[in-house]
Image 1 (cartoon, rainbow, N blue to C red):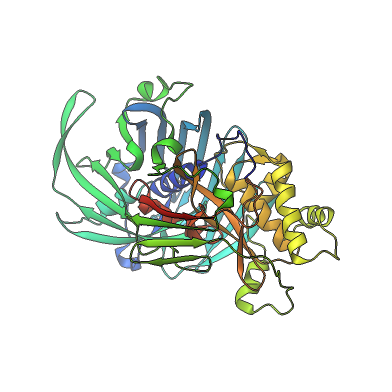
Image 2: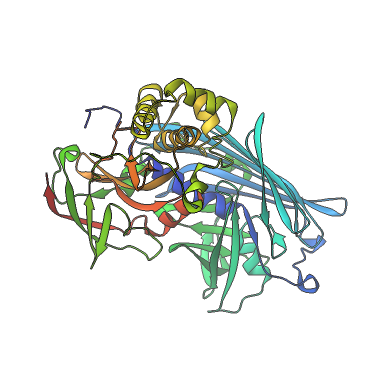
Length: 486
C-alpha cells in the first residue's frame, strides 16, 4: 500500500452516519393516518419558538433553533442547526436550514433543505402531489428531479417525538412510524416507545416530563417532553445530546476548536498489528455486536459462526463484458447524486479512458485519476459527483461517489461499499467502490487499490439509503483478527 500521510481522511464516514441520524431526528416522517384522525396542532399551541444547545459528552458543539407559525391556512416551519464538528483533527462549521409549509392537518405541502459546510453545500427541495413526493436534489444550478410514491399521507412536525406525543401513547407502549430522510432519499421504519415519566433539572427548575425513546436501525435516542409537548432534552449515540436553553445561551459558548474527534471515538481497536495489509491474500476476523441488516456474506467475504474470511480477488483473467443482465444493468444508470449521464461526467470519463481500453484498463485509469486528482480532505456534506468534480476534494465518500459516476459513464456497473478499514492499529469507518466484470471487484480511490486490500470489511453496499444500516452498529462492533495469510 502506498504510504500516505492523509490520516485526516480515515473514518470520516462515521461523521456522515452521524449526520444521517441528525437529519432523521430533525426532518421528515410519515405516519399511516386516515384523514378523519389526522393530527391537528391547536392554534393555541402556536407560535412555537424553541432553542436547544447541542453537546458532545457535555461539551457544547452547536445549537438548534425551531419555529412553527401560521401562514394563512397553512403552517410554516423553520429550523436552523449550527455545529462545530471535529473529524480527524480538522474542525469544520456545519450549517443546516430546513423550512417549508404544512397543510392545516399538518400534512406536508413543501420543504426546502440546505446543508452548508466549509467546502460543500447540498440542497433538497420538494412537494407532495398526486400521492407522490416530488424531489429536486443536488446543487442549485444542477438539480435532479425524482419521485417517491407515497402510500400514506406524509407529515412533518419538527421531530418524531411530536408525533409520538400527539399520538397520545400510553406508558410502556410503542408506535411505529416511517421516516423520510432527504439526504439519502430513503424511507425507513422507526419505533417510538413511551417510557415512565421522569423529573429532570432544566434552566434552574425541576420539571416533570414524559419520556420517549426511539429505536432506529438499532440506534437508541431518547427525549424528555413537557406536559405541553415541547422537547426539553434529548440523548443519542456517541455522547451527542441536546437541551432546551434561552436564546442568549444558545448563541454563546461554541468553541472554534472541538477537542473530541468523532472518527476516533467511533473507531475499533485491533488486537494485532497489521504491518502490510496490501500484501495479504486472506484475513480471518471474529466479529461481535453486529445486526442482521449487514451484508457480510457475499462475493469475496464469507461469514460463518461469527468468523469473517476475506479473500483478495484474483484478477489474472479480467473478463470482457458482453451481455449484462437486467439486475446488473441497474448499476449503469445515473442517480440523483451520481450523475453518470451528465455531460461533464461523461466528458471527464472520456478524457481518462480510451474506447479501446479493456474493462480492467478503464477501471484502473479511473481509480488512479481520482486518487491523483482529488485532494484528501474531511468533508461534512451529502456527497455529489458533480460538485466533487468541480471542487476536486473530499473524503472517502466524495472519492467513492465520483469514482462510481465515472465508472458508470465508462460503461462499467458500479456501486458504493462501506464498512471498516485498518489503519495504524485501529479499524475506522470508511467507504470505497465495487464494480462489476463477471463478478464484483473492490477498488479504493483513496488508497489507489484495485482490488482493495483485505482489511476493507464490507458491512453495506448500495447507492445511499443502505448506509443507514451502519447506524445501529456504531459503537457496538467488536473485532478480533484471528489469522493473516500472504
